[in-house]
Length: 415
Image (cartoon, rainbow, N blue to C red):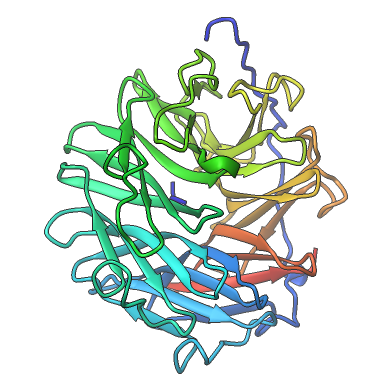
C-alpha cells in the first residue's frame, strides 16, 4: 500500500470536530519495551507489516538518509527481534538505486515478497522475494529481484497480493512524467511474467480523466483482482475502485457504469483511498482521506462496485478532527467492525487509531469515543499499516521521529 454517476447521491457523515485522546497507557508493556519495538537505528520507515505462519511479525519499509534501501525486519510474537532472520533480526537490501518499499506479503513457507520503486536507470517497479531466513531467493528473477516497467520513464509498485496459486499481483502506476495511469502486473511464483494476464503480464487503465494510481489491492477467488486508489476527475483526485478478471481485462459487471471501475467524490477537495479490506458482509471498505482538511474517510462499496447506501450516510463516513492533514493509511477488518490506522494531528502528529461499528458509526466502547491517539516518543509519529495478531492485539507499523531522524517503529495496543 502507498504511503498515499449523477443519480448516486454521496453525502459525508460529518462527525464534527472531535478530540483525539493521547493514551500511551494503552501501549502493551509485554510487547518489546513499553509496547514499542524499533529497528534500523540509523533511520528508517516501516510501510507494511504482516503475520507469518509461525505468528512472527514481518515489517518492511525503507532506510532514510544518504542511501535509501529496502528494509525488512522480523520479530517474534512478543516483539523480540527474530535472530533467525539476520543476526539482529533485520536485513537491508541495496537494489542499486534509491529503493523505496511500499508493501509486502508473507509467503506460506515463511518467505516474503516486497514491492516498491527503485530509481536504478529510471523509476521502475521492483519485486523482491526473500527466503525464510531473509536472504534473497536466487531462483526468483535476477538474484531475487524482478524489475518492471510499462515503457514509461516512471512507475511504482504500491501494493502486492498473492493468489491461491502463488502468483504475485502488483499494483501501482505508470507515468510519462505528465500523466499517470493505474497499473497492474502479475508474475509467476519464480518471477516470470504471467502471460495469461494481459498478454505480457501487465495491464494499465484510465479510470479517471487525469492522473491516477492504485494504492491497495486484494486477490479474489478465481483469480480476479479488486484494487483501490485515486483518480483525478477535474482538478482533484477521487476515491477509485476497479475490478479486473483473471485474464487482466476489466470486469464489465462491476462499477457504476458497468465498465469495471467507479470513482467517488467524497468531500470538497482531494479524496484519496490508501487501503482496502473486505468486510464481513462482503462489501469492500476503502479507507484514506477526504476533503480540504484531509480528514480520515471510509467508503463502503458493494461487490457490484456501487456505494452501499446503508453505510454511514449514503455510503461513506468522514471523521472530522482538525484543520490539518490527517489520514487513514490502512483499514483492518475485525469481525463486523473496522479499525483505521494512520496519523492524527495534535500538538504534533501522532499514531491515530479509530474503530468503527459495522454501519460506520464510531465505536464508543473503544477509547471512550472510538478515537485514540498514540504518542510514541513526544515527537512526530505516524502509522502506515496495521495487523491483528491471533490473540486479537493490534500491531501498527510506521515511524516515530527522534532528533530529526525517523525511526522504524512497531507498537502494540492493549485494546
